[in-house]
Length: 458
Image (tube, rainbow, N blue to C red; front, side, top):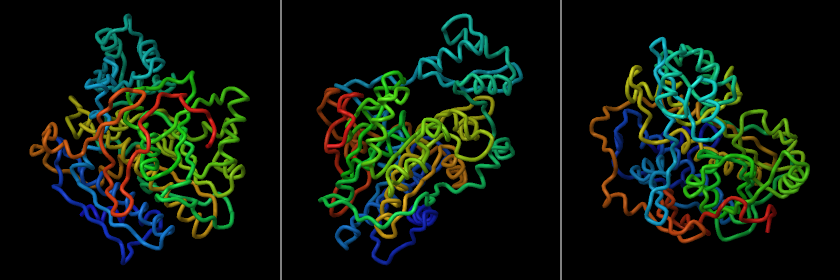
C-alpha cells in the first residue's frame, strides 16, 4: 500500500508512525499512464510523506496534527506537471528538437539532452555533426561506439547517457554504489540550541527558503514549501541558461532574484541572504558550491541551525557523483527507458518521475530538518538524487502497462487544475496535490520572471 511506502520513506528520516496520524490515499492504482513503472504508487507515497511532515510542523505550532489526503491520479499527474501548463491557452515549448535517442556504431543507443544552448552546441561539436540538424547529429553519432561517445560527452561537460538494461546498470560501478545508499538521508552538520518555528498562521509561515536550483527537481522542492507558507526566494544568474516555460510550473508562490556568484558582489549578497535563511536548497553537483565557499558546513557556520538540502543527478557517492545529468538521462542509463520500451527502441517514461519525486523528497527533508531543529536543535544536511529515486522506483517492481492511458480524460483532469493571472499572463496549471484538513495548501502569488524581485528578505 502507498501509505506503508510513505512510512518507509519517513522511517529513513527517523520519523515513525504515530497513533494520531490521519492519512488517506484514494483513487485507483497503477497503471495510470502507459508505463510498467509504479509511478502512482511512488508519487502518492512521496506526497503522503510530505503531507505528514507538514502535519508535524503544524503539530509543533498548535499541538494538533492535520488529516492528510492524497489522490493517486492527482499524484501521478503531478509527475508530469509541466505538461499541463497553458500560457494564455497555449502550451509552452520545452524540448529542443535535437534531444533524443541516437543509434551508435556498435548497436547501442545514446540519449542526448540538448535543451540548454551550450549543451546543444557541445553535443554537436563533440559528436562531429556537420550541420545543426537531427539528421546530421544522427549521422555523426553513428560513427561512434556507445561507451566512447558517452565518455566524450561527459568529459566535454555536456549531458547524455548510454541506454542500459537494468541488469547492466546494476552491475555498473555507479549502480553498485547507488544501491548502497538510502533513498534520502539527513545528517547533522552543526550544533546549535533548539529554535522554535517562527510564528504565523500556516505550517511554514516565517520560514525563509533560499532556492538556488534550476530545471525541475530543486524548483519543485521550493514550490512545495511555498504552497505551505514559506517565503521562498528563488535565485538565478543572468549568464546561466534557464527554461522559462518550466518556471511557469515551478515558480508558484516564490519571489525570483538575480545573484551572480562569479562576482564578489554576488558572493556578498549570497552570504547576507544565508545569514537570515532557515533552509538552503541547492541543485548543483556535489562540490560545485563548495568551490565557491558555500559548502554545507560553511553555510551552517554562517547560519547555525540552517537546513541544507542537496539535490543532484547522480548522488554524493560513486564514480559518477560529479557527472551532469537530468531526469531523461538518468532514466536511460539506469534501465528505466529500456524497460519502458526495449534496448533497441528505448522510450522515456510518460512522466518525469525522478525530477518531481526528488523535489518532493527535498521538501520533505527540509521539513524534517526544521522539525528536528525545533525539537532538538542542530544544523542539518539532507541529500537526495535522481539516481537514488530511479533505484527506489525500480525496486517497487512493475505492472502490465496495457491498461494505462495516454492521458487522463478532461473530466477527470479538471478537478486537479486551476488558473492564475500574473506576469506570464493567464496560466493553467495543477493545484497542490497534498490536501490538508486545517491549512489547505495554496500559492500566495503567481510565478514571476527571473530577476523580478530584489535579492533580500522582506
